Image (cartoon, helix red, strand yellow):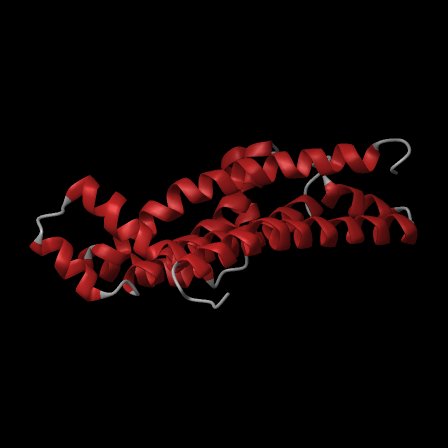
Length: 208
């Protein structure tokens, strides 16, 4: 697979879908989490729904995606979004809710509101929680992508797994599984864990 380029082509396709789906999840999940953390009405209204939907396995969204979007790339990206956006929003909300109330009162006393409040006070204070949410969302997105590609002819890593199973090619199945594990581990350890550690050290949440 590596010699004929199939593995690298499949990896490139999967990573492209992941980037699109995860990017959309961040654009939706972070503002939603901020809203749930800061606006009581939004929190009371949406949080039970978000928590309930998060309990649904991401692959359960695939039949609905196929009904709405057909056999297209959009279907898999939709599954990725639904698999990660809810986790991101809940983690961001938790990060906002964990901000020291004294800091918020000081900002209010000094008349810091609107964009200055969010950009200069709330987001920096909630950043450790937000980074944790982004890391969690990535892991959910990666799993959702693999599950979606397994059930849909996609040209990605999931399809290579399915082909290996159908052809009884144990070596191909194992090679793709190792690739999935390596990609997931590298992104988690090299990117997210590095950023998370630096943020937590900057905010005094870890020593050294």
